[in-house]
Length: 252
Length: 354
Picture 1 (cartoon, rainbow over the protein chains, first blue to last red):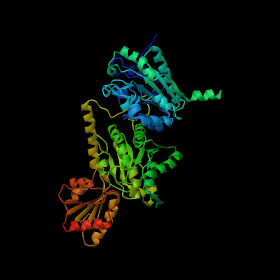
Picture 2: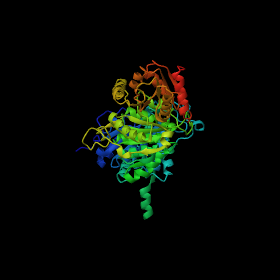
Picture 3: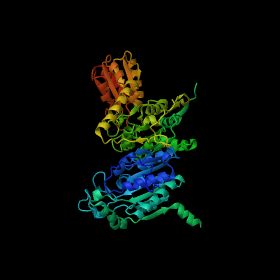
């Protein structure tokens, strides 16, 4: 009996991610969901600029590499061209919440029928650990060597909360993958985000609180603990918007 | 005989794009190209197409990138400041070898500049517009009929060579009305696009649309391959109209609206007994070098007439291999040279007063 195996939607290419990085887990969850929904043949993934820039090598479905922050605009084009395709973007915090904020907000406002997987690890990993739009107050990074000074650089952005104020988006949920129980919850959320698109419900964004042991300067274990102690208090987990559920509730 | 309809240049572009099979348009409001978006907003929903007003020029060009990845004909249009914003996307489209049609209805610059016609984005267009080694095919219409014809041609060339084509018009070309015969437009069938990301259907390995090559040897290889394609385009696709050039001693070089003005000046010069002619590049990239090289063998001087501070003049000098003096006759900032101004330049050149 097979208890566990690599999902079919992942290629055999070895991940380039650092030891202890949670990108690997999240890639697997996305691929498992693609397998379970039987949509690999019609799925198009959009990779960002950042650590997951080479995601196009890891997923077996057709893949597009987008300019920094522009994945939701590219996804909009792909989805409008072929609405029968299932289109997802996979973006980090610098990509989605800094340089690509306009594309994020407006694709959500349009309720574009796409799925966005948003990796929030509070740092720019690929370029070596600079301050991100989601870096915590006081967080030491290469470009905030004395800790993020909110007086000079402002406060970190809570993307789910911000987007939840929009009429447009269908589904917004924040999850994490720092424990087995949380990984299971994250997978459930990701699956819902893809199912929503299949059902034509519109824009779903899953924010995954992730770790970056390399640039946080921690062991993988300490990084997972830091998620619980520092990240989640600032970025509480949960569903921030579920329009269909709300409608059902109101209908009762 | 086909029926002619009176249309604005901008509308002719929009209608010709639809004739060419374009069903996806993304844009952002900016003068003086807005009629294109307005036309698309009206037409696209009626024919099962997409018109989407993007949140920015940057988003619009990236939506173009998405549709092109999916293998369909797609376009965006803008005017000078908006095209600067599209520069990033133009570079990515080139790097990923994606076809698309971009329209620039130029206005005066730099900066916010003005809203009156200009040709001062010549450098930006003919040198690529964004970062990296690449070119776009740049087409310069000089009548509303050509706005339509070159739009169709642009889509065809873009697909054939897997690169972006740009219609480099100006505010006058966009706004002026002329009779157009749309029935005459012939559209070649779209080539197969086996590289498109439309879903594997579990029947083939995955397609990847990408411009990232971290190994310099690989990136260099893509650059060399692209330039082999460019060399072929330069050898086969350069086009120019020659007017009264057979026995010309003074050659006027001008494109777009400047060529319309210059044609009048050439006729006036001929009446005065000056053997003037006009070379009107229709493709600005590839530049019709051969036409200029040949002309340099029999003219005494060349004049580049431009709505800019002198940009095409550099290509005229290169193409004529500096064998004859080349002078500039120009207005800028939204002003247009008059036939009298061009005639004066011709007379001065004929007297050897270069």
